[in-house]
Length: 173
Image (cartoon, rainbow, N blue to C red; front, top):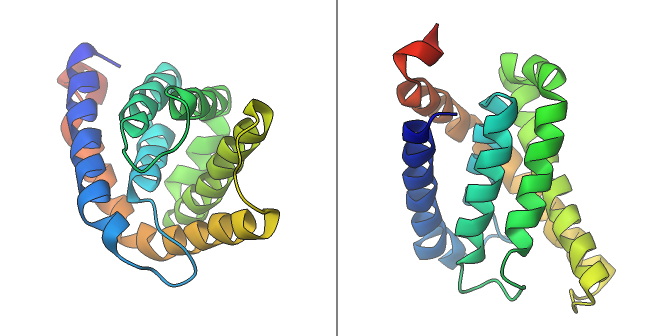
C-alpha cells in the first residue's frame, strides 16, 4: 500500500467513523446495534494485498479507539484489528476466493464481523474487563452479524468502486 492510498483510506475510514458515531449509533436497531465501520473496514481489508490488510487494520483500530462510546483501553481495537489484518494477510489467497463472488463476500464479511467482535470480547476477558454476561454478548455478536448480513449487499459494491478509485496507475496493472 502506497502512502497516498494509506492517506486516502484513512480519510475514508474517518468519514465512515463520523457517520457511524453521528448517525448509525443513534438508531435503535432491533436485537442490537450495527457497526457500519467494522463492516467497511473488514471489506477494505479483504480486498487489500498482504501488507495493506495489516496497515488498514492498524489505522482502522486507531480511529475506532477514538470513539467516545468505547469503554476499553486505548489501543485495544488497534490490536484486535491488526490481528485480524494479519489473519487476512496470511490467508490472502483463500480470501481472494471469497471476494470474487458477491454472496460469498457478503457471508465472509458477516462472519468476519462476528469473529472480530469475539476477538475483542476475548481480549477484554484476558485484560479483566467487565464485558457483561455471556448471553448478552452472544446476542450482540449475532445481532451485529445479522445486520451486517442485511446491509452488506448495499455496501460492498461501493467498496469495490472506492478501492478501484484509490488504486494508483501502477497498482492497477
